[in-house]
Length: 207
Image 1 (cartoon, rainbow, N blue to C red):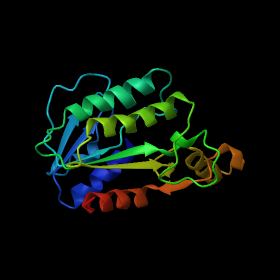
Image 2 (image 1 turned 90 degrees about the horizontal axis):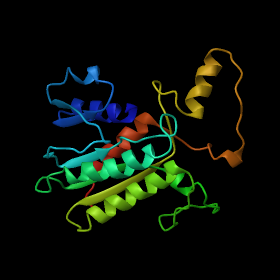
Image 3 (image 1 turned 90 degrees about the vertical axis):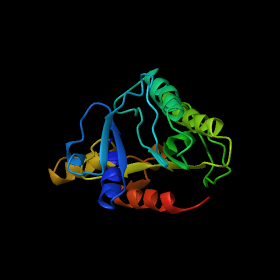
Image 4 (image 1 turned 180 degrees about the vertical axis):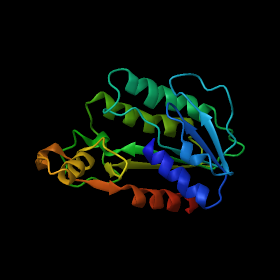
């Protein structure tokens, strides 16, 4: 993913040894780093190997822009469960899951807190909620730190899958844009560079 690629570049530049997994598009920009290990991984299939890694940063996801129907559950829930089972617990100490703010899509509260119970309806949002539950059920012991980041829309120069990115491109080309009202819940945004720094911070924090 775009987010995963940015995170990989960040840690590779810091001289960490990084296992970078990809599905369809080979990340050619990561080849130049000697401390990178590129592995093709299809979350729709069983993972036959064991990963000896200290920290898992999980960015892969079936999103509404590319998938629909049962694919959300197959990739986001079953695929994630398969990935978790492929981790060698002798090495693992932390998992950072990039989830989605969409898990709150049916919540009516004006203020969302850590104790707010997510309410959702769409297949995508349900799969992200189940993904979080799968993580917590798989690692019940406190020996491994679990961090879940429920992200809003991500803004990046290379992305064009959300409202903000598409609108910026239209503005640059002097095309018309549609302003979506507050009830559409697209008024929150996260810049990719800030996200990378946030993930970096959480890799260092002890919980």
